Image (tube, rainbow, N blue to C red):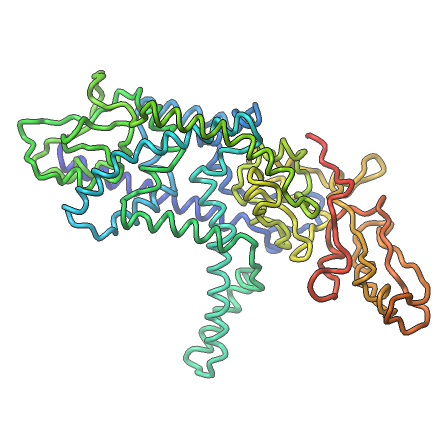
Amino acid sequence: MNRSAAVIVRRARRLSQAVFLLAFLALVFHARYSTLTMDLAAGRVEAPPSAGGFLYFDPFAALGLLVSSRSIPAPFLWAIVVSAATILLGRFFCGWICPFGTLHHILGRLAPLRPLRRASVRAAGRRAQALKYGLLAAILAAAALTALQPAAFDPLSILARALAVSVFPAVHLAAVRVLSAAMDSGASILAEPASAAYRLLERRELVGEAVPFRTALSTGVLLSALLLANLAWPRAWCRFLCPLGALLGLLARLSPLRLLKDGSRCVPCARCAILCPGGASPDGEAAWRGTECVLCLNCAAACPEDALGFGFREDAEAARAPDLTRRALVTGLAGGLLSAPFLRSSRSRAGRSRLIRPPGALPEPLFLAACLRCGACTRICPKAAIHPSLLDAGIEGIWTPRIIPRVGYCVYSCTLCGQVCPSGAIRPLTIEEKKGSDRVRPVKLGTAVVDRGRCIPWDSGLSCLACEEVCPVSPKAITVDVGPGLGPRAVGGAVGRPRVDSFWCIGCGRCENICPVDGEAAIRVFPLGESRAEG
């Protein structure tokens, strides 16, 4: 390939990376509730498109669903197209499309490594590249025996979850604080522009109260660590850990696209190897690793002698097999199989007494197997009630969504989370299914329980019926029992005391959310009687 042609193709690759990265960021950002575009009082509310659509083209997400839940939703069949293209062209997805890979590519280019340092990094990296294949085997083996969802470790899920839970909320909080500080500064040169900017953003519902998600810090630290690793090892995640990259590398082994090298023109400058982000060894120190090549064309564009190019050639020795040794394979499979009992036992030890799933969630084993942990439901929730869990559902349930009523409640007429869920772990509900009618019972998330030792009317004999006032169902699930205050600090006289009718209570959490008691609410929702019929 002529060097100038390689430069043009490389520019096309960079444009493709920018387009897909910006599209991914835009989809995650705009997949949020806004009264400007959505009205929950309407008969039908359409959720905006989410980044979960990217996962439909993700072969690892599709394979993960097949292994863990024994089925693949129809939209994920698009992954066959990417798989077929990978067999033909190699790992083009990693170098041209993957938004997470693009971020690693950018950070890898910023690594301040001298050529000698890069050479040592390459030598160490070649031995470690087998790790991702062992991890792929371990994840799939564990998923086959438990409800572990492999896509929780998928790069697209990791990035979408981090953006929804950590990055965008952090940017929101920083913007609010900077604008507020500028408006309070007393300097007109700062206050007036800041005030105008704040009003503009407020009209567009881009500023307001920032909600801290439970896993925001840990998710942000994980994302930062993966990205900053590129300063030591360019494209470290892609080379050593990415299970999607490992799967695509196995498929790329079948590709007839090869790196073509004119040995008579090559000079030992090693520029191609220094600029190779995938550790594909294009410099001839070892056979070219087609399974590690992400088709960035840095090597061909940088070659001063036009000695490198790409073309189709049926040459079995032109590309090395993946660096997957028998030891790595056996270790990965054994680790995955041996982890199954530990993962299962973590279910029983998990604290599930307050584990409330979003409306429409499948039964727990099916939910854990289908949920991709992409954070789409967290991002779209109008009241920020949905948060990623930690170990509440065991290790298998890490990053799965749960409702925390003390932070936010489930809006009575909202069905947005089921609309944006890409895998069907939260099935889409109709308004009739969610609210109920003469023909069907409403979806029940749990049941509220009054803690009489903390409830103001029950304990102190003072008037407080905030929970009864906001109960959205009809007839109300919270009724008033009028009688004298009986608590240790009762002041006497008749007072209305709340009681919960478990038949009518849907567990939306609005009562717990509004309870004025400091700390833990005096009325709390537990997953008692939850309805999670398989759709």
